[in-house]
Amino acid sequence: MIADRQTTLRAPVTLEGIGVHSGAPVGICLRPSSANSGIVFLRRDGEAGASQLIHARYTKVSATELCTVIGDRAAASVATVEHLMSACAGLGVDNVLVEIDGPEMPIMDGSASAFVSAIESVGTSLLSAPRRYLRILRPVRVENGRAFAELLPFEPGFRLDVEIDFDSSVIGRQRKVFDLEPAAYASEIARARTFGFMRDVEQLWKAGFALGASLDNTVAVGDEAVINPEGVRYSDEFVRHKVLDAIGDLALGGHPILGEFRSYCGGHRLNVRILEALFSDRANYAIVEAAPVYAGRAVQMAMSAPAAFAPDLH
Image (cartoon, rainbow, N blue to C red; front, side, top):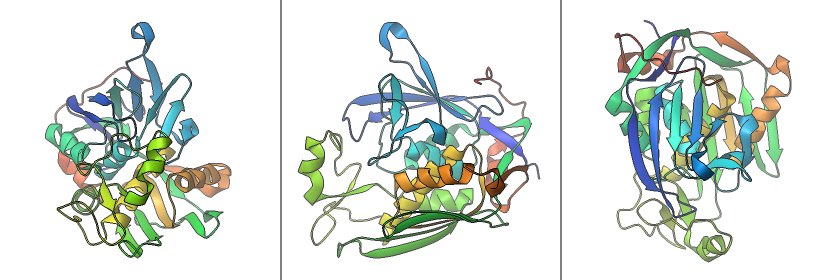
């Protein structure tokens, strides 16, 4: 087993869609990248052809209202990064250069499924550098009213225990405990779509949000039922999507996590706040080189051919 090495994509792959909030068309190209570069976004739509690199780290988060935004919103930023980040973390992809020609990632079908399919279509390559993990050494917790998020030591790998409780008979209270492993991620989490309440639509539009939302990319929740003709993909699709988001947001810590994440009525803001709390004290964590049990599929996807290297982005 060689699951202790970093990975990147074997070849570039492109996707096109619209931004769920902006409604504007956008194209991205996922490219192989070098070891220790992480996930980096390259905005290529600046004035006079200028480009700007934005590293996908929690320190670069500039907004968490309804989605996660990284970068300087006055200069260059990228919104709704959580679904792609989730797909990369879920499949064990460490280093990717994301070229994008707009300020918001494409929403695709509202889940991470299209990104998973794109990554699997080209496969991954093993790099020579060892994979580093973020090991949780002691409990860290943040709260906001009744909502909370916490990170706890957990030796076997990365476990998420996510619970939601909505004042809606359509959703109600749902809980999902999930051990992150690529095959399980692809089948149980990646297809869970983002959702919204019909009662909030006009208010969101007035605030400049959800301009690209539709039944093609959002589970629309009415007063008594889901509006989408096809219904839900899972009976608990809502909490599964919260797990998907949490995996993506927590990937902004820069390394795969060895620990347990627990959340109650959380969201993007609490997900980022728990990372801020974790990194506020060096005694909370350690950066280690290890091979957790869920890394198996990343190895299966990786080819034994020489790895493709790109210029170091740091």
